View 1 (tube, one colour):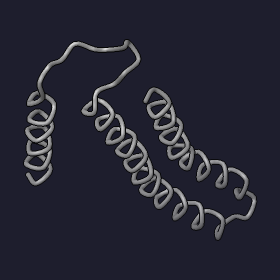
View 2: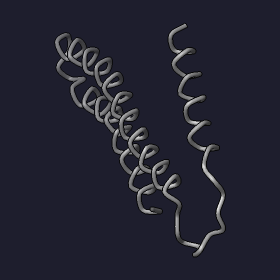
View 3: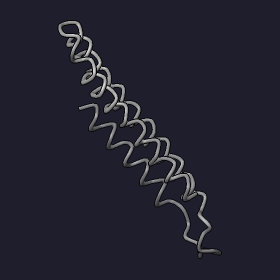
View 4: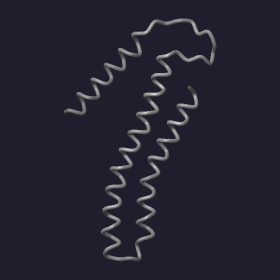
Length: 105
């Protein structure tokens, strides 16, 4: 229930910020408004932050299972490391997307 309320509040606040500005003709095709720059920075921060949170959850689960598997059989260490590093790739993808967003600003 709390997630729905938080999500709804964020959508309402974002809508107010996005649609409350005045519309002006663009001086240049490459010039971004202040609101567009702010939205890009917020988007880049959210992408990086949420990717890192997802990575923390995934690595927490995968590393715990990997440690348990390695303690029973040392031969599965290579496979366990691969699964943990695959979970860490989520943070790298989030960072790449945030660089792509910031490259447009």
